[in-house]
Length: 153
Image (tube, rainbow, N blue to C red; front, side):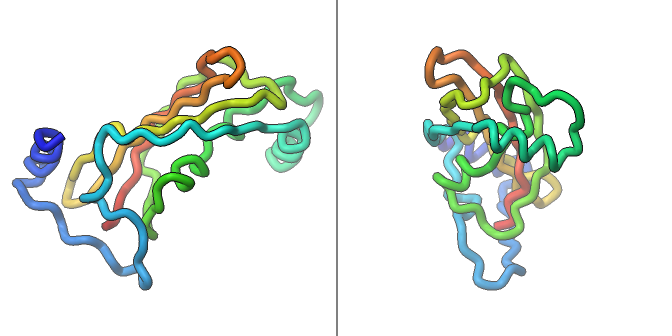
């Protein structure tokens, strides 16, 4: 792990930029304390018919309702926030989704997250999370997400 940290520091000439603490009352996990390779979870997640119906109404979907959970209802930060206190000012920088199998309405799912990487680019800190959502019943992969977040401090 020390080699990975050294690699991240080399990205910017060996120095980590000063924390951006413009947000008053700063709290949360500092960039230096986010360990690459750390895993969180699993966390149970179930989306019921009422949630799917409400989502369809908000999204303006007309006609027949899906018989599965829309991917937008599975792509959530709640699991990450349950295990890691995000500092104020965290922003989405990039996100990639890979859909593998539909999640059935009412199906029990498991969400796992791991810190896949972190790096400094243009004097800004970034943390990459790998998130997987699997069926708790038959362990099939539902969706995988790679999410890069700007980490201000």
